Length: 414
Image (cartoon, rainbow, N blue to C red; front, side, top):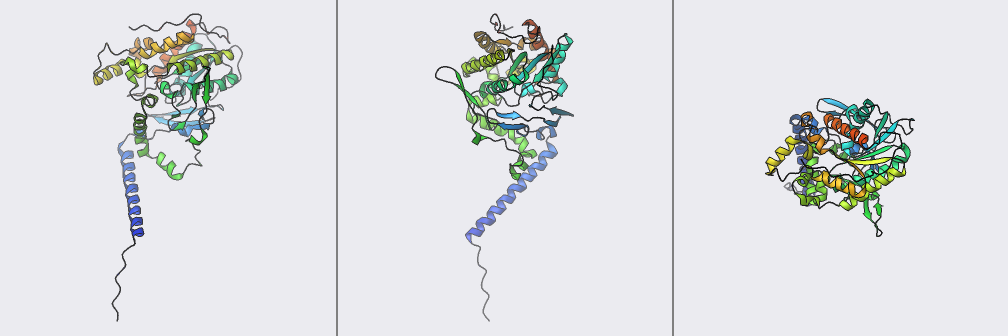
């Protein structure tokens, strides 16, 4: 009887396969443990955040637009905030293209700071401005055309699309500091966007977002694994850190776009010189011209940035970075914007002084460090915009338009 043959050792290919499977199982196990720990010990408000991409549609000209007839509810702190749009993707959902005779229509454009989707709809900027005007005897209809993630260039293109449809009397653009990074970036938040540049004759020309770079995928075309990962708590927690790391690697403009250390403009004057003011001025000028072409008056305002208007935040920042009080100038950015507006004869509404004088009504932003306004911030913004419209005599007869007669002076520093 012959002895049994010894078992053959596994082949190298089979060993590699076994190791690969074991490695994959370890990764899945670690991810599952991390997911469980995150859901158990991290506040739900942190990891159940909703990605804006889920509310966007790819657009060949604008990069993305807000979905029409959107109806979504999100949890914010202990309350549920419902957000709805009309067939054109604007709010309120009751907004219609048709005009009501004798009613002054105002359209607001900008990014997430204008949209205000983290506050109840009746406390967002458009609703509070409309109520403020009505209380002053002005029959007004305020339409919010803000889109999350937009910079000045995209707001301009959306303006050119919507003004012929809604025919407003007044157009307002709410500029946020991260727009200064967005206008020179071909991509924002993982999505391709349009970019303006100067033609040889000095005119503006636009390059649409390349279709091949689109990242906004319909749910049915995105892979199951991708959908699963993007909706996991662990992914939601670490996603902002990934954006911040990528922005730091890509440089100053991307850092500005993602809101990383943009407060340096308030204590390092040289930081302001790094932005493309010529391009921003040309974009704002074209917004004004577009509004005039459609019979509307135009103005823009500086969104009340946390680092410019909230004293407790400024004091904490100065102490943390050891910045002398004489070096920190909360008017620095607004003064530069006012100077730009004056040079182009475009209306500009300052906000810093009004917020500084009403600190007892704060905080004005979503705490602890969110630059988006809370209801108190939108209330004060609505008040000062209403005052500005009266000061500029834009609330008389509907369809009033035209550039300011004299340049605006830059706000003084207290």
